[in-house]
Image (tube, rainbow, N blue to C red; front, side, top):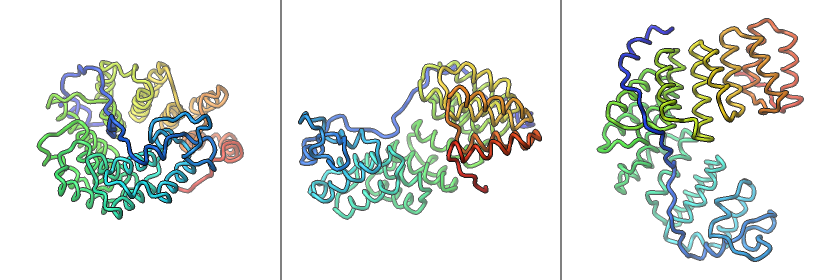
Length: 375
């Protein structure tokens, strides 16, 4: 076990936590205004060539902007955006509401660059951003590690008096942390008059992902001492930090926090959190505890299986790792991705399973379309 286990664990605070809260990452206005765009986008689009004007077929209108909110096809979304520009309704509006909807639709499909292009169009149209716009654009900047844009948006937030808005503040912190500017991230956090949970999460997550795991854990301890209730986002980041430290004692305390918070009732978010616990125990050298968490999960995804395979491979359990991979494939439980194959190939390499490793290597591209890469 890590020699840092005892000092860190002694700083831990009482473990009881009430149920985890699930805050929305981006707020949405409750009322949809009536505007020309509201009539322009009133139908979903079953066929790309129909666009967004008359695609319902039966003439039954849907709520305004429903197409943007429900569209899961990037090509159709881009077509809808192009029609909005071509027919000009966006540029006739002084409110950023509909611009925000378009940007949010792109981000929902993890398309940050088009979202930023919408923001540029909005700026050229002379439409000022509001408290909803900046968090959306900051999230896009975060995806792209766009430090300079983040600084500009930070300045815009200060200029408009939005620097203390929880969503703007956490977005600014996220951009700085993702870009490795931890000093700037902590400065924004420490100068905040009211440190909301979103800001704590942004700093802790940034530190954990940036290799500053001990700082992340220390900040988590401070959060608990301040009387704040961590949510699932907090615990995922702390579990990741514990895994990086290899601190089993601290990892077990974090697990108790999760159990006391009844995270098993959290659906998809619960999967993410439990995947983090599986990964945490694997990195702490306890694949048996990782398997215990895994076996009790009501739902699993490819990350769940990959975390187990990786944990077994990491500690010399090559045959068990390969068995887990075979089970995942034979049960049709999940489709392996490139990380899964890296894990099983690593297990084969460390376990001397040359023939099996070569077979999986060829299967990787032939059956799963995963291209081998050089790290």
